[in-house]
Length: 124
Image 1 (cartoon, rainbow, N blue to C red):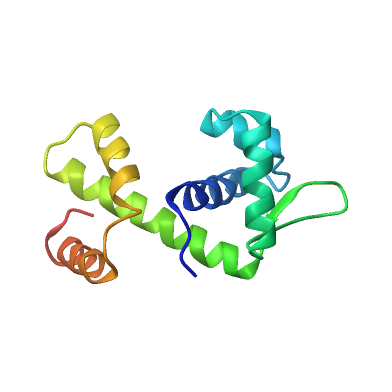
Image 2 (cartoon, one colour; image 1 turned 120 degrees about the vertical axis):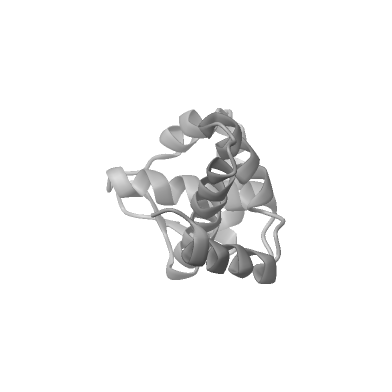
């Protein structure tokens, strides 16, 4: 299933927030991304309709299995791309911002080649 960049950002944010807290709320997502409550509500509705998130009985947002797969994929791309850009001498802030843009558009083939390169030549 193809998901737009904004949907991937929401899933990645939910994933990252859920790593430090088991209780992820819409307000937490909005604060993290800097989006308004109505924007977050609309986006979460789309993700719910796509079967990528669900709300538990307390209203906390959880990734479904499919949502977690997509979120982990996006997060891995973000962290690997940030790392390689920093190894090229880019400062962390710029590397993080650029990785965030690139992660949504890079092909699987190119990303796998980057990971292989990092594994072979990158620092640990």
